[in-house]
Length: 440
Image (cartoon, rainbow, N blue to C red):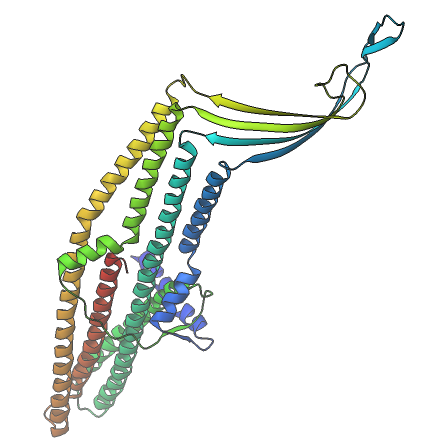
């Protein structure tokens, strides 16, 4: 048991120290809307998905570029060994040099290649890349929705932690005051010693709860600070929470909205379309391709001219090339099978998604209903606790109730207030989860 006690004491000490460090400066008052905006702007997950979107955009540019003419410039120098010169003696006794010794060879070329017909392969690849780009855009929106939900969860956790700290600290203050009164009563001989022991046990328990509450608040504050990109140790104070909104409970209409609005579903649809385009591109491998090419050579010596001469000369060429893969070892068939299998994967994932949407919305509606009922119960409990405190105060003033009864009633009011705050947070989180399920 001793190691566990030491670990608990260390955790409590760390929590108290963190609270002290976090409160060295003025706390930053943060509303829920501000927290969500900062969370989305500083999220590493959104940044990662945005970078993937840039990758997809670059791939679209690559697919477009391969369909355009390609112009390239080449230059080179070659040193060859010396050779015996060859020539002919003409009838007029003139010697005509046919193959001179030219060890220094220079060559430059401007080359142009234009694809005319590829069987639709390049176009299909471009369409597939565009679908991937649209899927990446949907991924960004889906990730933003996830981040918004995480920030809202952390915000309400901090609200509940703040209220818990307030309730426990106030309860501790009242318990300490009660302990002082009981000790004074003991010194006056009005109460037995066991009353003091009972009050001391209550005060010690409240001190333990206060340490735990501060530690929980430190963790909640650090979690929210991480999500909004605030430096470690930043003191945060939740602002005025937003009012609760009403939600339509028509599950059929909500399911239809979710199918249309969910960006993660749209991402799967786009990737399914991209798989279809890749299948078309693989099929196009069986068709012939036609391309034209040409270029201009400027070389010394220019091998297109005879006899060779140590001079710079220009030549050009133009060609039409047809390529038809009569047998590719099954490459096109394998690529098409891969794309079709990928499409089937996405089909199954879409079917699973659609089957889960209605269940998820029903769960979220049930959470909203139960949390709303819990909030009504918490309101009733708070009203009853306040009424009980009023009655106990009147009885104590009349001398028919003791101070511990007043303390119990006061603590009950504080606990009822905390229960109400927790019920409000649960109701708001259930609403946020429903909005996420709807793709908002």
